[in-house]
Image (cartoon, rainbow, N blue to C red; front, side, top):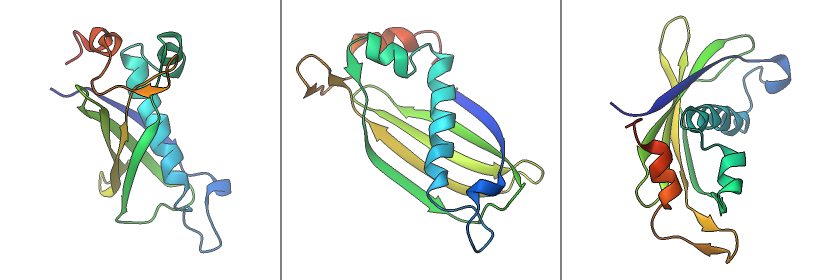
Length: 136
């Protein structure tokens, strides 16, 4: 079974645009909230990454907008660890809470960068492997 995390969100007024739908840029923030919940499950969120000596910049982002999100719509955002050996690839789905209809999906790719040398790592560091033990 894959490692996943799910968050619940109600689309707030300040996230909608003049067409009364959620502005497309906010989807990235929603993905980020779900990704943090996923990484918190294994104890390797942003502070732990930093403390371990690695930065994990996002180098790729893809979003497919299937249905718009609207004001006060209740949604679930799920993050799923898809790859971890050489990079972190996390996939996302946004679903309507009531109907479970998929509204959007996408993925991000992150790579480890050694903060001392600022060099990109071509394999995930051992600390990530240690954190994932018992969760995969």
